[in-house]
Image 1 (cartoon, protein in one colour):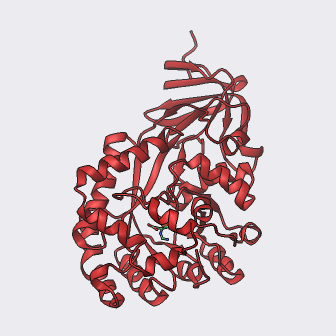
Image 2 (cartoon, helix red, strand yellow; image 1 turned 60 degrees about the vertical axis):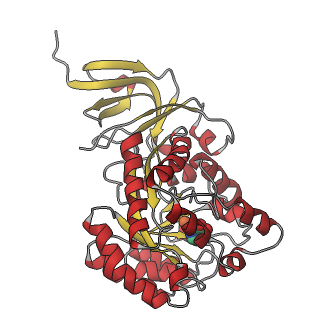
Image 3 (cartoon, rainbow, N blue to C red; image 1 turned 90 degrees about the vertical axis):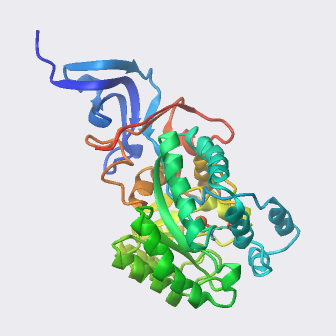
Length: 407
Ligand code: NIG
Ligand code: FE
């Protein structure tokens, strides 16, 4: 008897793989392939014809269906109380997002509701949204704070995000978004609020191990570049990576600011200039596009897709799930919207929700493509071709989500 060359816990055979590795076929495709998993990591993949002698605890035929890396939603505001469906109605009657925000609605109305909610209520309401995302293949999700805007509620939001990961097995990456809005008690005193964030709230959240990254909302009616730079300096001083809501409603130099701090990502980018795109390219930041917010706000100015492509800025796609501008709990719907609204290709969309989303979270070495050594977070789809993943809406082709493990 020949000794098996490969030992594994799970061998998947007769599969089509969309590995999302670059440099080969479209989608990094390998047809009629096998993939082996040991200790939650991919230990072998390739054509069936080259499969070595294997000793597998379990073997499963994929029967010609497709495997992709599990999806990654790299920008969400999943934890909040209440909803803003009434504002949605007001906007359809002509009020703008900025007008509603200036009149005390907008983000601050969700802040009021979130401050009053107990943690269990926050877990339960976010859990519904997370279940919806996971049912369509999401295994890793970024969750921001930013509806607490004081020390206690910001910390609660981040703890709720971590608890959601423990409850569901999803990998949760937390982002501190204290600089999301000036809270009512600091109205007209944005500088004092920024001081509170850097002297007290962010250090407390960091000390409790609750902060994987720091984000801010850069828009003329919210925070200036100077104020955000203070928060980013504080984050950088604590070795925490930053990212930015940049140039969503106007060109506020957000992309340049993000690039100055070597941000992991700059998100939205509808109004980003050529100089902003070049700055992102030089800094190696990923552009995270959020078509759900673009659609819900009825925006007409599209992000500078052509320039991003030309300059080689990696492009990710995310839901931006939030009650104000993107009530979207389906990453595949975001992918589909990115094709129709932004003219991304289906392959760019799938890469944007796997490889590039992993890059935006600084996790690309660990996941985001099917590759030997990477975590075996794998989605199995009942489709004939991976282009279908940015094509169907209201039909869920996920057959199963396989979760790997940390190394
Ligand atoms: O990504 N623009 C700021 N943040 C969110 C909106 C949050 C809200 O309106 O509650 C966004 O679009
Ligand atoms: Fe957002």
